[in-house]
Length: 159
Length: 102
Image (cartoon, rainbow over all chains, first blue to last red; front, top):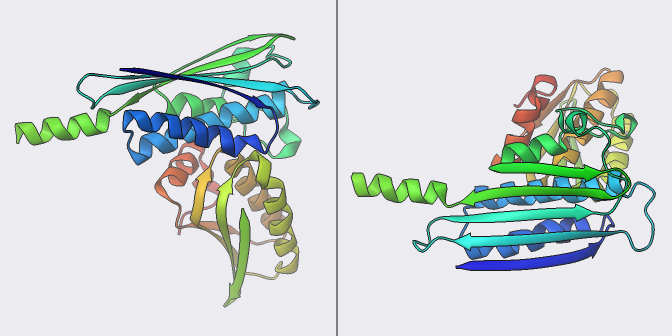
């Protein structure tokens, strides 16, 4: 069974909480564990914050973020996959390799940790980013849901 | 995000309540720095994270920033009661090497 949603929202700080909560609510379709849900919220928060803080540095009316999610639930209803794409139309990233490196930040004087991309990579099962200068950035992430739950069932079956 | 402070036996406790993200970190930063200046005579400061319901990498920046601020005043910082998801972020970013968990 497949599910889909597309969300277009203004790139303002007030929407950081809304964006991660909306994706988490959508992910409930896949029966995630609390840990999986929390990983998803954190990764989405990092990506959306990047759009607001970096892509749209100057912040003007009409700056927008597009979030697309695809959820596939396996027939056993124990496994699922969540695909998330977060797109902005901002300044783009010149040096992707450097941007992704842990602790690298272009805004060191603002107490930024430089861990955003590292957290997305660590908390999700697959992660990639495409960017073009002056055109924007797209972050793609995949989270596999139900691995813990399936392991538990298997363990009980073998016991 | 709300900040509550208490002081006992020369230890300053700073309890964070709510969600810590980029949008609401600025106010928390101002509050915590005000406390730092007011309690510069503390022997140590302990950040109590039990009521932090969400934290992303903004929290890392926030905590390291406060660690530096208190260090300049001669006050060492500690962390207590992180939730499992907060703990995961703080572990992977190495925050505990600066601010030990107690």
